[in-house]
Length: 115
Image 1: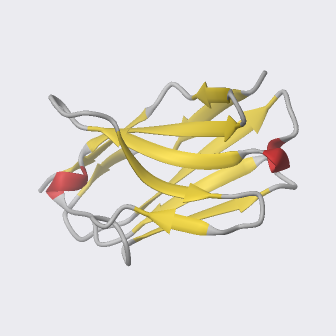
Image 2: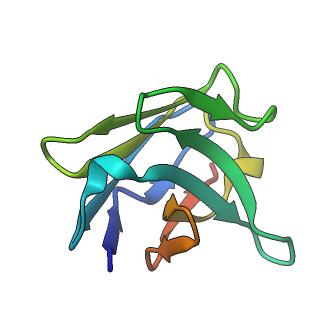
């Protein structure tokens, strides 16, 4: 069992930056692929960024070059640094931990990009 708690969301102007954090507890964090998803109103949840046990990363085309995912296994935490934010990045952002058939979700944190 893994518990995930996101933080760092908020209101930011277009072009601004935010860093999301996801603290994990309850299992061996380093074994998990960690992902950030987001869901905008009226849209399906989409994968934003992923990082494997060996720190290989992948990004959605829409955020590549602007967002950076990283993990600190000593702190059981995964981060999402978001730069050059756009209004279309507005969504609830969810942390996800995945290994094998096991899949865990955080409660989500709201990110709003607006002037």
